[in-house]
Image (tube, rainbow, N blue to C red; front, side, top):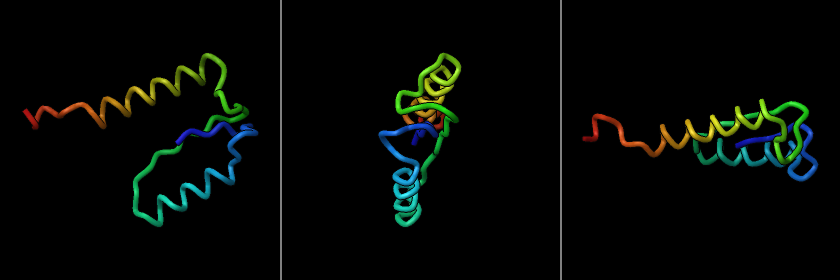
Length: 69
């Protein structure tokens, strides 16, 4: 999950409610918070950080490990 703290489209309360549902259902989750960012997470440093995190998530979650070969 990704949340800009200045997002006026998806409010922090909505994110907290979603996290509560994950906890209740025992579903693992990651939360990335971007201070003073809106819904678009604009700005090169924040956007680069976000895209690197998304790429890392795909690489770890979808890439078969060496033990699987």
